[in-house]
Length: 574
Ligand code: PEP
Ligand code: MG
Image (cartoon, rainbow, N blue to C red):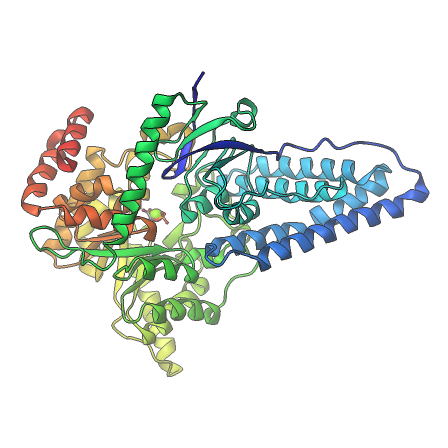
């Protein structure tokens, strides 16, 4: 009997295969009391287990697949850092001594205490890190109990398998990629978990947050994984299988066709050129942007340089990172956003608690309260401007006074470079993100003081609709097509046109091919997105005629009612 499970589709595509169960279930830790004279030996046994996990992680890192995404190495670094933290590698030893207990029991108790601490954290990003702690602890536990962790081996050419796990760690994903699984599904994992981020960049169909797939699915069950809709069908009948085989073929064909668009200019049917830019998080991602032939980098989220470390990157380190991207882009524009930390992107050194962090000291607000950090970053960006087309982008502007303060700090950075005779482009364009309704409504005044604008729809939707973008319980209300959101986008685009200031969209909406014609119709000519979405969006652009999409977009803008909006969108995309 077929049955269906619903989760979050974190990576598109379809797969059909047999379930291969992967157990990450908590290992039962035995508990026994030791004689005093055995404690030293038990501590040595624990140290050996930690050493073998250290070697295992180093080995994984040294054997990363050739095209492994840049984040993988960073995730392994995180696991190594956790392993070296005294809370994991030392505290259990104290527990062995004080409780005269075996190493497994000491580790299990310590892990639970740490997880409780993480669960009490308000920041959803930090809360998610409890999974990393658990995964590292499980590796040590397996080493103690004599069976090292391993993803079941699967080689190319065998019957397709779907890995079914309660939870998967990023380092498991390394092996997973090497062993050619058709898809993976997990019980746990939020949309912001490391594994979800990796899944997206690996481009493997994946569905997460299925809650009890691991318990309901048996080894060898036939599964259909629909990463597009976040659905898993267990034991599908012949008709369902046939339907999904057709979808699979269509998907593969589409991917092949899309590749052929790489070299084509992004121009609408009526000959209007459209700029397609890439969003990147780390310098290494620039390769993906080049592979998809992006016209430039429309958003370099510089805050990722500050993550997974205890110290701050200094000016020189940042300069090298920016210069690397700028040189790789060979004269194409590189828009580097100044630090957007705070809200869900909190770091331990920020140490600022806020009841409502998304409305607190975030992004430009945080930078203005820490001028030395901001100045070092801006100096690094300006220095990189000597090597190519650098543009500086200020996030989360809401207030014109903030803009003036930021601009005067940028002037200060320039003066200090002048004094030291360090070369930079004096005319480096400065832009502002429109991601707060106040900024969209006041776009005219921001545009007058800036060289360009970039609409961050992820936050613009969050702040317009008062919906926390990281909160699952209100995710269904997160609506890019809400008339208020569309009006703010439209108003910003019109203001840019009137004042001859370029406007782009760099939020997820820009990479969603269902929105391409609508955005074109509303007047957008510059889209910035994850490189993986670029060709699909280009395909839509090649199929668009502005004389057709503009009136339909105008009608959608006036529609108001959700059903009418949907039917307008369908007509646009027909
Ligand atoms: C946005 O808010 O749309 C955006 C691009 O910024 P981020 O997703 O980094 O907040
Ligand atoms: Mg944003």
